[in-house]
Amino acid sequence: MFIGEYAHSIDNKKRLAIPSKFRKELGPKAVITRGLDQCLVIYPLKEWNLLADKIGKLPISQMEARGFTRIMLAGAMDAELDKLGRILIPDYLKKYANLKKNVIITGLYNRLEIWDKDKWNAYRVKMEKEMGDSVSKLGELGI
Image 1 (cartoon, helix red, strand yellow):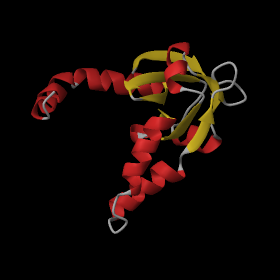
Image 2 (cartoon, helix red, strand yellow):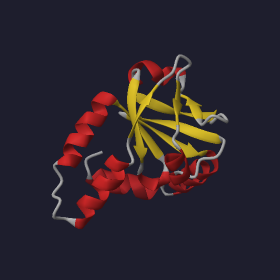
Image 3 (cartoon, rainbow, N blue to C red):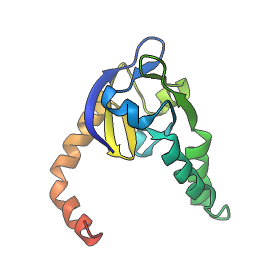
């Protein structure tokens, strides 16, 4: 399980070191794609295959399903960790998430998210302020 929040930086060759705590569970091969809220998501290959299977079964007759499928699958790329535990962030994904040098990597149970540091800090502050309202709504979902 992935949990935690780590500050890292993207080097001049567009590589990002994955926190050592996450490397074993992530495995040598993973998938990186566009995430919600203008971040990137890294899935272990097993988790990605489960998600991609569900996405592949969405009805192509629905415009929203087609759009989501295109964004998630067309934007996906295999991500292999090098000897130093780094992955390459392709230009189109770096641009999508507006990633600069400093990023935050968050562990979210079965996946990792990569955020621009400033964007993450603004998002986190907003969510912390709204935590009370969110908890009430999550209660309706059984949490």
